[in-house]
Image 1: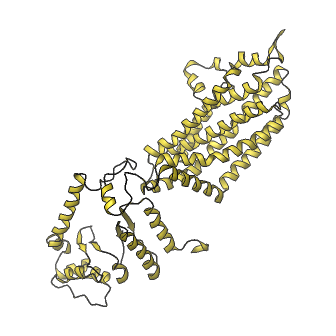
Image 2 (image 1 turned 90 degrees about the vertical axis):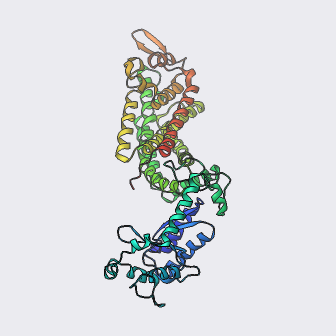
Image 3 (image 1 turned 120 degrees about the horizontal axis):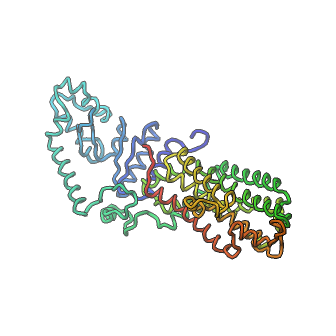
Length: 482
């Protein structure tokens, strides 16, 4: 193919194979031979014919096929301009299109078919509007009055009757994941896997394959991950050097406030950047999901779970790199427990905001709408996280923005695990007034050291909530424009 990739013929066969993964009882193909030479077209049509041999029905549109390709078909629906039917029935067993030719030759004035002719070209020529005008006939009217039309109508009524009584395959509903279709018995008769299962593979196999595909895609297209790791290192160095050695100056009120400011800045900015960077990736994945869900390959829950799991190792490594840079350059207290607490809250916050970006992209129609909606919440959360405006100073009608806010609990957790246990370090907070750092943190910000475990659980809840946005958007919303 071009540049060493798959050839056009191989891509078409791969597309057919992708449709067959879901074990459909009917396969629809639109001009599978267009753009191919005779040899490649023959290979594609042999693949299609093998699909029919496995018990499936193939409905295929094709323009001006040659004799060999037409021999692969069992039945033909021939339409005239305007969509009226000229012929709808069998072509004739064993090739040669004898039934079609016999029907058209029976029309008075139609020239006889010559064995060297291409049957497709001949039937198009003799039924063309100019030929109709010359013969003074309307082939669509002739078909409606023919025994073949009555036979075709009877077959349609027979299948409709089976569907209405539940003995045939039920028509597709508006919900592509409405459950196992009623046609399991018909699929079993056609040689397809039955057993009441909606998809060809169990959920765990779907999940494993989708995660593997996502990780492979990340590896083959590294721009996204290179960008966020570059931002991680750059932002870590920028903030770490900005707050260089501030973590050692916690023996005064100004020093404690400096440490809090450093914790506030370093805990939020990377997560908010991740939230925006992930959106273009989700946009591309969503387009693929719509197509593959329509083919019955997998469901929304599995795809949403795979999206999140594929991000997991990258977010873990990203958080470790960031914390190592920031923690060592800002010189926060070199205590293993405090370092682990700091990393844990940074990691959970990065996950929460990354999943927020993914979720918002899956519940909005396009990038501009997603960026606008997400920016509103990010700015609101930054303002009402309890650091720029203390909780006790927030107006009652805005308190929801404090409590429903992942930034609130991240800053709470980072500050309280760094300073909330310093009961033996005293600072002067007013004229002749001193108190411990731990007491100052609790009195000023209402941060309690005993809450650190609950803060972790709350952040895990935000991670799960934002991950569920993706599932709900993929499951119940459809922003396809075609």
